[in-house]
Amino acid sequence: MDLDLGFIISRKTASTSAGTKLVLFITLGVLRQLTAAVFPALMDVNWIKKDGHLTQIDNGLTTDVWGVSNNYIYRLSKNSTWEQVEGSMKHVSTGEAGIWGVNSLNDVHIRKGVTSTTPSGTEWKKILPEKFKQIDSGPRGIVYAVNQPDFIFCRRGITTDIPEGTAWIRLDGLLKYVSCNVMGCYGVNWHNDVYYRTGVTEEDCKETENLDFSNSESTSANTSHAESTNARNISLISDEELQKMKKTRIPLNTKRNTAWAVRVWKEWAEERNSKTPANKKVGLDICKVSDVELRHWLAKFVVEVRKKATKGECYPPNTLYQLCCALLRYLRNNGRPALNFFEDPNFKHF
Image (tube, rainbow, N blue to C red; front, side, top):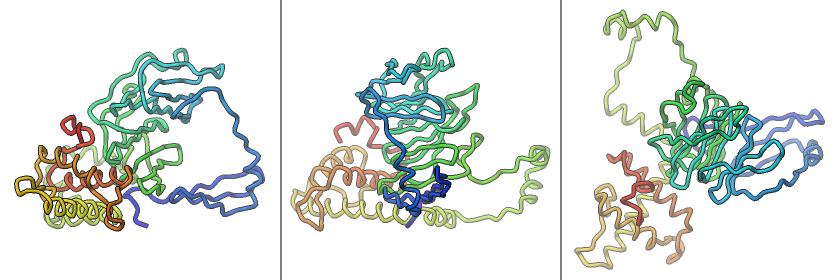
């Protein structure tokens, strides 16, 4: 299996009441029990039905429980009743890093004024400029999120004085859902493979390596640039070598999905062009299709494209979405990094 960079297949170990170790491997949504002897002990745990109807719920590393229903926001009070909180969100997350939410426009918000006396907070603050479809508030200082094309981000600079943090940092890999706890950050990709990332800290939400910021390093400002460079013994690389390194860091599955989407676009365009007048041809190379043309042809593409193996059969909605994500990734990697036809208002008809 090719892993998205920075994440590895997850394995959890837990102690049961019988004292036996239970090891679970999570991949493709399947939990494989390796120690059958503990199964009866697990069956002793019962689910208790609570009042209320929610479409999404979150219980972080605190005693708080928040949820949403039809974009209405609710918080479970001390007397176990659901209290409505002002605002409108499709997804909320509560944890030591605060209470965060995403609305129907994928705008990100953090709940301000949350204290022991006002546990529901006082107002929502919008965090610009990124838009996300899902967000997770984890341990203190750690917030992860994913956007529409499944790019992964974490929030840097979260402190007591600045609970909303200072910047979004993009991570390697692609995931459709993320969740963080004290063991690390977990995620699920569009294949439903499960990954986790270790080494995430409050000081640096992205890096997994230990960085040495010693006093000798902090005094390097008094050293000339040449002396500093020599002391580090750096090794220069060419632009070509750098591009080659970037390409080798892309997971094989991602490369295959991207190539597949580009091939589907080309084959659709070729067949369409064979059936239309010369003045209505679509570009075979999607990179040469302008944004204005792309707005028109993408709408045609998702409606007209068909499976090749079973001629005439439509792709399911999720596959169409993944096709478009892969095409967007291809365009971004080939000179159009700011393009986002999922969120750009100019692509609203698409």
